[in-house]
Amino acid sequence: MMTEFKMKSMLYEFYKLDWMLSHGYTILDMMVSINEYFAEDNYEVEDLPSKEEMLTEWEIESGFDGEIYVFFPEFCVCELKDRNYIYDLLEKIGDISLRTELRKAYTEYVKV
Image (cartoon, rainbow, N blue to C red; front, side, top):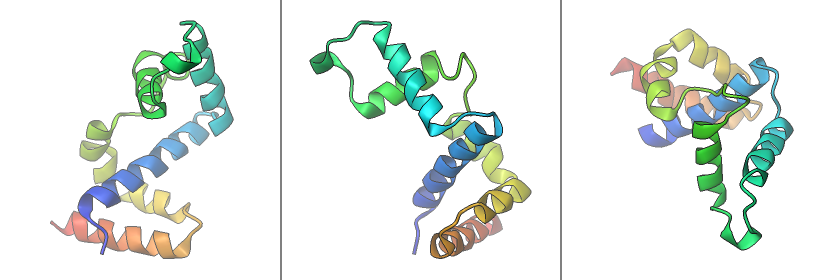
């Protein structure tokens, strides 16, 4: 059984991908933007932050020219409560088994 935190985290990751695509951005656009952001600071390779730290800093400080998806806490109090959006988001997941598991966990979550 999927935990509530795992369900929220996975839906948040799918939400971020959905946000990027609906705003005309791709994973490649994100990678290029992150690289450009950190290249401006002239980091030495050995001094670069971890990938997770790089992503977080880029999200907070730059994003896509100042535009970025909502952060996890806001997602949990806004987007996650929009059942129509979440069910539409779930339909975009190609892995039927994962989609079913997430749908079941989300349905249980919204019953509470």
